[in-house]
Structure formats: C-alpha cells, structure tokens
Image 1 (cartoon, helix red, strand yellow):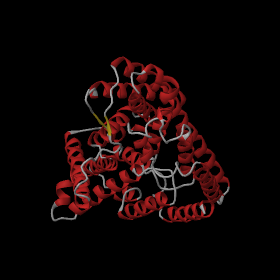
Image 2 (cartoon, one colour):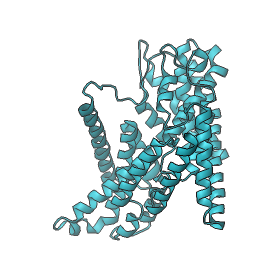
Image 3 (cartoon, one colour):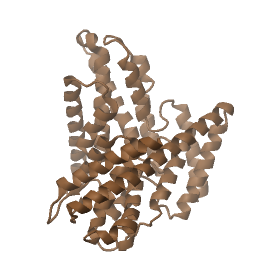
Image 4 (tube, helix red, strand yellow):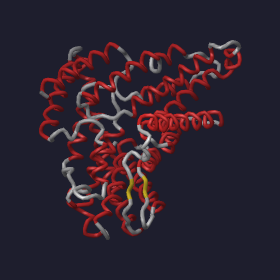
Length: 402
C-alpha cells in the first residue's frame, strides 16, 4: 500500500503547493530573505505587498493544511519551519489589524517598516518555542537567525511573544489532559557522567557530528541545485522528482519498518531512555544502528519531493541515531556506566544539528529546553557546557564542508 498511497498523496500535495505559492519547503529561508529586503528599505516605507507574498492569511492556512498532510502520509520532516511561517504570519496579521484601528496608522507610520520586521522576528521566535516547548530556543533562534539589527523594542516584543506562545502551549495541554505535567520534548536524562568523560565526548562528537551534519546539508544543496537545473530545462521535471522521490521514500519506509516517517521523536525518546529494552542498541535498545542513515536519506527525499516541512526535528533525530553509534563503537568501554550513553547522544545531537544549520547557539538552546537533565547526582551545568562545546565545534567543522 505504501508504494501506492505515498506517491499519490505526495503528488496531490505537490499540486496543492504549486497552487498556493509561498507554501513550499520550510519557510524559514523565505522569511529571512524578506527580512533582508526590509532592512534595505527606509523606516517609513510600506511593504505590505512584498510581505503578503511570504506571510499572509492565505499562506498561514495553506501551510498548516499541507504540513498536516505531509506528516499524515509519511513525510520524514518536522513542523518547526512551517510553524515559524505560521507564527510570523499571525504576528503580521495582528499588526495589520492594529493599523486598521483609528489613528493607529499615523502613530505607527514613522517606523512602519521597523514594526513589520519586529513582528516577523517575534513571530519566528514564538513559532520555534511552541514547536519545541523551549523558551530559550525560541529567543536564541530569533536573535541568531533573524535579528540582523536588534533593539529594545524588538527584544521586548520577542520576549512577550515567546512567553505568550509557551503559556498557550501549557494552557492547551492542561485543557486536553489535566494530568499532563512533563512538557519536555525528549523527557528526563537522569544518569551520571564525569567531567572528563563529557570533555572528550564533546570534542570527538563535535568533530565527527559536525562533519556529518555539514556533509548532509551540502548534499541537500547539491541535489536542490540539480533539481532546479532540470526544472528550468523541463517544466514537467518537478513532477518527476516528486513521484521518483516518493517511490524511493516508500521503499525506504517498507525496508526499515517505517522508522523514517515523521519527526522521529519517539525514537529519540527511546534512545535517551534508561529503561529496560531501551537506550543505545548495544545496551539492548530497540532502535537500529542504521536509523541515522535512514533518517538522513528520508529527509532528503521528502525535501526534494517539494513538500511543506521543516528539517530541524529530523536532524535532531538523525543526530540521536548517530550518537548511539558513536557511544557503542567509541565511548562504551571508556565511560563509567551504561546510562552514560545518554550524554554521548546529547552531545552528538547538538553537534550534528549545529553542523547542519551552522547555528550553534540555536541548536544548543533548543536542545537544553527539550531535555530535563537531573537525577541523584545532578551534573546539568557540566553537561550544558559539553553540549555547547560540541555544537560550536560541529558548526566550525561543518563550515569547511558547506
């Protein structure tokens, strides 16, 4: 059934993406390019036509529907990129509503362009915070990726939007399930690793994870350039890419028992767990060693098919799969306990993610908000330093490849 359902569904989604311009891909690069264009305009300029091509109610609705469809039909993708577009669109629409109020336009006119940029930056941070349940990740993402020039107004608006988005997430979870207390994305890491263990794990994971993440990103860029070249030569080539990639993805799902579908969150939780029959595969875990390779390939195929989705969560999942391989093959005999695999996985996740995005602070900040580190022998601060070290090294090493 996968060889029938996935190609048909992906082709239908591809038609829908082409029917609603601006909904393809992640959406983060489009918003970044829009901000760069707004930076070059005078503060009083009105850029509503340019903004509406990237952020509008039409794109908000289309992006949401196409994201749900892509996840439902087996796309190996995340929701964070589209959620940045959704949140930024919501902030821009809110600004337009405010401007429609009596005398508001005269008050905002001297800095209309600045307020538009502020709305986009604040919305992008709120989207990441809501996607990953990470306040620090949302704020750092907006600053590192979007805020070319930052001021007090932007900082205050960003903080308010991120906090309000998290309050909304907490409130909705309370309404849906009053007993749902733990909102950390990947749960709790409660085992212990020594400072010396974390030091050499962070260094080695940073180099190897950054190289792998940078290579993955460069491979994606090369394939996108090949796709762009063929679609310029043949207008129907885009449908060939969609069908071919969806068939390959279906084959990948079938051959790996479906572990490559979706964001991969449940597999990361299993790798990070210290319960019986979970954790790294060499400790009896149920996630195979080739998970990271399959996840990387599945994400490439999904992106090349032209769907609306993000790459952050799949990159973290691939990093976790790579981390368990690093632990089993390099670190297991050198670490104090089997539970120490969790810290090797965390360092590899930040290194791979930092190498893929070349945004070390964002990758570190997102992940520390997604994992609760604690236990009988709490070593959270040391672990955070190791994760930031791995992320920074990974980003620098990836720069040599990509």
